[in-house]
Image (cartoon, rainbow over all chains, first blue to last red; front, top):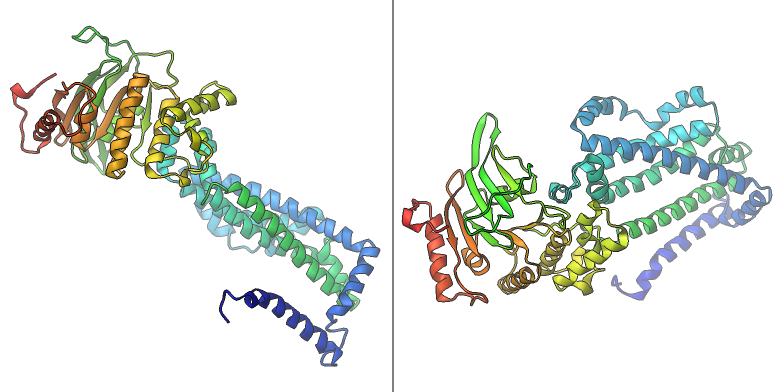
Length: 252
Length: 269
């Protein structure tokens, strides 16, 4: 089948349908106990129960609020420090060994301090999420600022924009935007993982609701939340790609 | 850069810019490299001066000094203040250097953002400049959508928009194909007639220099020195590759040839 045939476009759909059929068949044919592997046909009912109890919307709201706040705090700090170290050799030098010491610490290793400092609450979740986001965005921004074409910076100087803030606004930031956005998009996925991780430790949201359901062996509810996470991430990534397309419409 | 009113020229017109005893050298790893030595030049208002010379002779460095992008080791540059100018100088780069994230109109308005003009006034001035270079209908394009010649026109418009006292051009047409280059040379002559701009034009193309300029300064040597200054005493409109231009071209070529020592009778100032 050639790549251009109309049937080729249906392959992804066919693959998904096959996956769902096998998934549905496995518990129904008795290959797995239903409680260990709930068939997809059980999911709409489970979803409706969660929606009707109000838990679905509430968990989603909580998770989204952790997510956006963590993403905002981490990105703002990352862009800020990345710009600073990208533009100033002194700042870059000061941060160089700090980076080496702190960067390898996984975001989840901060969980004990997150709980000690903030308690098991929203602050702890935002803290953990923002740490992961921070490093990704910081390094992406630093690299993007360092890679700005010096010739374009000279254009700014030639037209009288000689101060650091002027150079930043007129040339460095716009020129570095594509590189910063690459980091932000990676952070978008990373932050989502951190949301679930933070909530599995007890901060309420999708992750904690999933864990509750799991402890009651309500596996169909667990799957509902797993798919909810996938859907939310998909929506977020789509919105991001749209915004990126708008921001970078100057590129061919 | 110090700005004082320059002394009158021999022909009575006060120069708009005067370069006095300009030298530039830089030091790297304890090694001193002289780029320019004791350069003296004065331009009358509205004059078109071409600087020619081989690569590395300090032509572009001189423009960078004039722009304030590099500091001279010795010497002074005096520019006659002009209240109508937003900037004393504006530079057209060899490689256009448009900002890719700005539309054409916004690129042209770039330098105006340093002035106190509001957005509408900046746009108006930018459109005027675009019209002058014949690209008003491309105002909303992105730079990548333009040809090489169009990019250089936009770069020229960006420089003209700030109404500089002196327009500096750094080999602006050297990366273009012959037809586009000749077309832009004639456009530059027209724009100069319309605006009366004083222009310092750096090129390694001697035919281009004599075709465009009122005077041609031949830079040669290491460090670069003005070996000869020749007046292009040929009436405009000039005929490209006319005998008179070719003769003058040959003389300038001899001026910058490495072995040529300046002879007293060659000096025309």
